[in-house]
Length: 281
Ligand code: ZN
Image 1 (tube, rainbow, N blue to C red):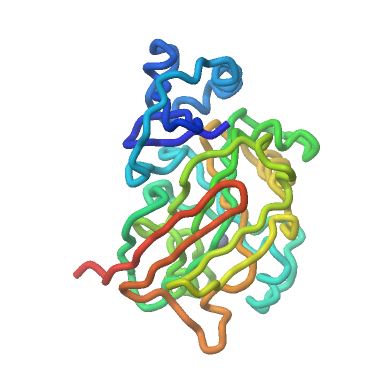
Image 2: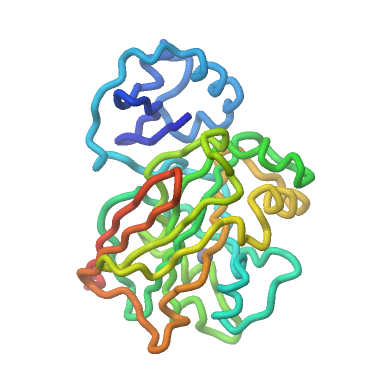
């Protein structure tokens, strides 16, 4: 199943287009794309049996973040061995977690205003929670995931690394720094949900390419590790970490500039496209 946030309304995607969930369900389910995660199991069984009539062609420019107003957004640093190595850091014994404040979340297309000269790309698989999780063992981790989407953990490295200790959360939370989309795909849609190719390209040049099978802490393992500390709430968003190829680790370093075009793709999910603009004066 694929669902999306189309101009702020929850839609179910079919081969014929988008089905407005509130209308198709006779108001049983809200149009609010966030509300569905609190009733995920009920919604999934309705969608499995729902008549697929009423699908309409839609303009993809209207797609927004699949989970637009989560209570909690988790970012995971150093979760691929090759990225930890390029960062010159050791492998974490437990997930290195920060937040992206929810105000940075946006959709799969559009413009992002640069905040300086050290804004970097980070393609990431993003998981959205569909069943509250507290002390969930890894073998049941997937049961708490509504689905997967693509994300960019855009990072202002100067802000991130300012101060005597890194402050990842601020450096990764400027407006527009958390694009997600283009839609949410349930894990049963993948041949192997634990092994998806992901990558991104700047102005057509591939800069990152990896596979989620190389995650140090997999999606279900992250559900276990995070839910051992605090509850994961429905609609919560987990950016699972980035593979190697970030601009900061290149020689010479390379960062996003005004006019750059960033295309982000995950196998079995889809593609996002963003263009960068000058810092607002
Ligand atoms: Zn990241």
